[in-house]
Image (cartoon, rainbow, N blue to C red; front, side):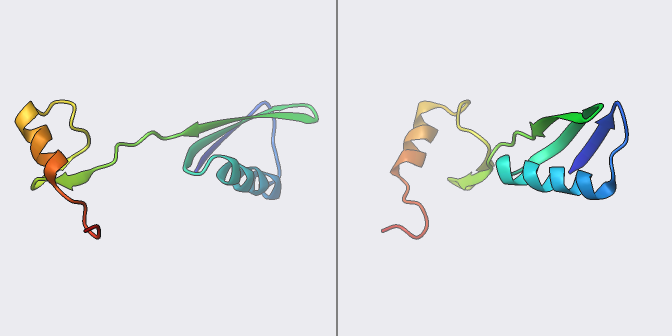
Amino acid sequence: MVVHVTGGKLPAEEIELYKARAEELHPGTHTLDISVDGDYVDLTYHVTPFDRIKRITGYLVGSMDRWNDAKRAEAADRLPHGKV
C-alpha cells in the first residue's frame, strides 16, 4: 500500500495503524492519503479497480461486452468447473 502524508509528520507506528484500518475497512486499498491538520487527520482511501479475467470458450477475457451473439450463446451453454 502506498501512503502519502501531507501537512505534517506522523510516527511510523501511527501510519501502520492507519494502514491496518484502511485494509480492514476497504480491502484492496492501493493508496492511502493522510492529511494532517494539527491534532486531526483526514484519511482518503483509493481502491484500485480491476477487471476479472476468466477463461471462456478457450479465450482469456475480462468482459464479454464486445462478443457477438453466437459467442455469447456458446458461453451461456457452458457449465462452470466444479458444477454438474
